[in-house]
Image 1: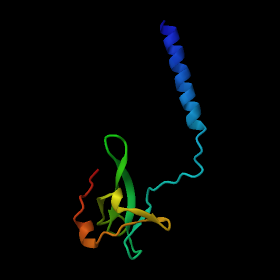
Image 2: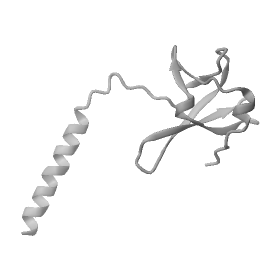
Image 3: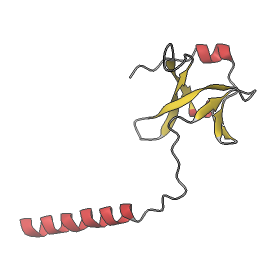
Image 4: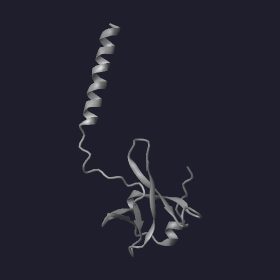
Length: 107
């Protein structure tokens, strides 16, 4: 009985690996370090991470703002509801004051 169970498990794992290898990834892009701009099109930061909830659904982005050459910058959490994708950048209509009130992310 044990041999049958292990054989079945092996088939499942091999089938899963094969399907992962055949996935078409040609249209996928990474949003790591993607620019985030304000309503005027001025860069306000870069996406560092995408945060997910308990179910694995993406809900927010960690955005690195301020500073020069990683000195004096901070990471803030912006809800994905407050970001749109426009002209190759992520944009927000949030004001500077609203951005300053967002929670900081300290990983």
